[in-house]
Length: 392
Image (spheres, rainbow, N blue to C red):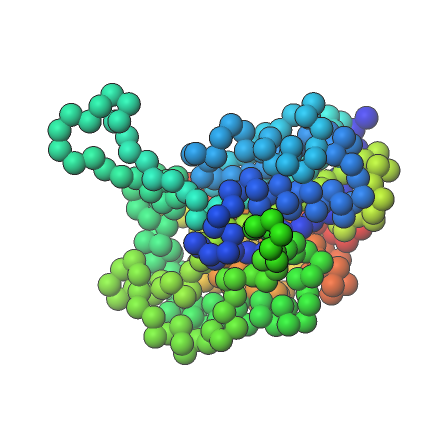
């Protein structure tokens, strides 16, 4: 029977590993499997109770058949369960949760594991033409991470160059970007010091018998606007985008257990939140960084909320320029946005980020007693996704 509502029963993310850092020897599936297992344990539910599995991942080359299936079996989910790997670029993890919400409300499932994962450290390099034999001259080596994740395929421009364009059009200054980025790190460092990540974050075992990686490697507590202001632009001479005011490459995973009314009865845990609405939006590929504006407005309209009704927002920080352009267009109170820091501090493992922002949102809502929250991300290619949740 179809459920009227879908609920988030458990939501966890891995510790965030810096690029080529502490998690780099693990595959995305190994990281995701540990987080998925933790989500089931939090809900006190066995793997045989899960109806379907949806896991987002962007760079799948070299990862083997159906990475979502690998995660499910690693977490102890029964092998009769269908698994689907999702790729909508940066929104993959949230799209997986949106799909879980849809199948539950359609009556096709009652308990679904959904989330996302990425090991950017293990993304391979590719050589085309080798299958037929390269006949003459140099062969081009493609970086799968850049080609499949960080380049606008429609014109070959890299995301950072498009972010420069967005900053110029939206009138976002270098100083404002650096201040925003520093605040992201400072908020994440404050959240770490106050123990606010304890409920959402899972330590990851890297080597059997060794201490697990337990603290995010990506956060820089010492970051200040002044220090970031000394960094040189990366993508354009005289530009404003630097390594400091952009999200960092990272390894990580986040998993969410979604249940309908009957699915809740299988869990020995109270839900964290109820999914109220979801929305997608789209526009020209080069305007991807502005796409969340429409998605956030649409999801609030579907929920019957005004923007002012929302207590907390989690908006993925691909770049400080993009974040500020969206926040200003929506006229949001910055004290409600990414209160524990965002991807500039925590990193942006592409396939994981959608589920990560949702996970951080529901735990921040519980910590602060917030009632209404919205998570949103821009996606390479010109789309955006958003989800509205309320405390359960």
